[in-house]
Length: 311
Ligand code: ZN
Image 1 (cartoon, helix red, strand yellow):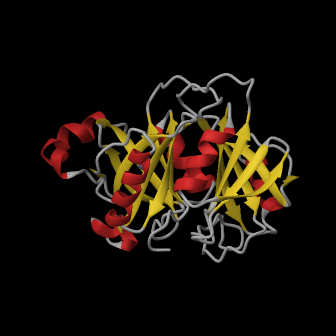
Image 2 (image 1 turned 180 degrees about the horizontal axis):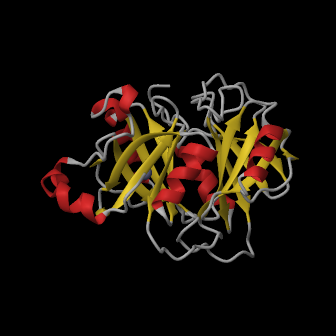
């Protein structure tokens, strides 16, 4: 697994109200908030990270909550669906829970040999809970209401909607080491053997659909996982050699990042395992303090004052 793309590292989406986002993901969905920080490029905005106990790559969903943000629109050139792996018998629990909390959701259905429950978060972000047909030994974060028997284990997959799947598929197969595993209708499933979980990218061909519009309730980017900066920089060379633009290495405090737009229009990131979320908070206190990157620490008082209060 050392020199490979090890599946999804994290997915980042846009939300509206910060408190509503926090309540939904920690209380209704039962995720752990593993880091509460600010958008490093816009410190007047929070950056929330939700995941499992330790914030393992492959479990991390992050949000920029922008008060009063205009809603986006799903379309091509965008990650349009997040898949979470859940224990196989847990879907009825979730359907009942979503009904009780007035979460917009569909019926339990089947696709590619797996059953799933589709729902939307309060901003309209589309997520599927999937009873995965692949073994998944990851341990869910447990809360009082969402126990380990039913809790989410981390990502199963991400779905990208594209006008033409081929250019994006070529990045997945020729650069990232994925292969086409299955197809059902307009959905093409790519998977890597480098890691057993969070290893799936589904490409949906939608040649007639209009381009997605970034905004509340849409995904901002998909980060893929690499073991360390050495592997990351080797992939940077591979991306450059295909004539694509890619950023220099950026320090995100909890990982190092590179960004590039893949030919289908989706913003991809390559993010490292190191140093991880315990770099500035002990494990038992993850997500409980507002953490700021060094360059903003001197502005802490004014930043804290400008951010929406959370309870
Ligand atoms: Zn990211």
